[in-house]
Length: 130
Image 1 (cartoon, rainbow, N blue to C red):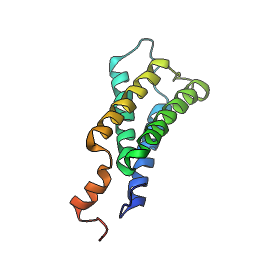
Image 2: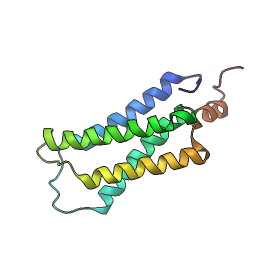
Image 3: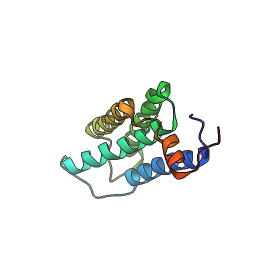
């Protein structure tokens, strides 16, 4: 993890994002019979946000770990939907959408937005004195 002034805040944000994703994915919902492009965009966006948040907290050498963590959460949610819910179902296309979001976030991180939490702390005046 990057040397952040408020690491607990950033970790709490990541956990909150993950919790929102899990709850939204496992709450009872309508039984959907067809593939919805809106649903896939929601999956892509949620996992893009989570992976980008995680990449903001770690140095460049750890971006792949951040991406793997986000992807594995998505895989676990798909398994949970298949096994633990009656109105949701695990879907390989959802997993593909999750992976797409993670890969886009990874590309964005490698293109220069990774480690953004340190820059945000400096901008907000929270950075540690060096």
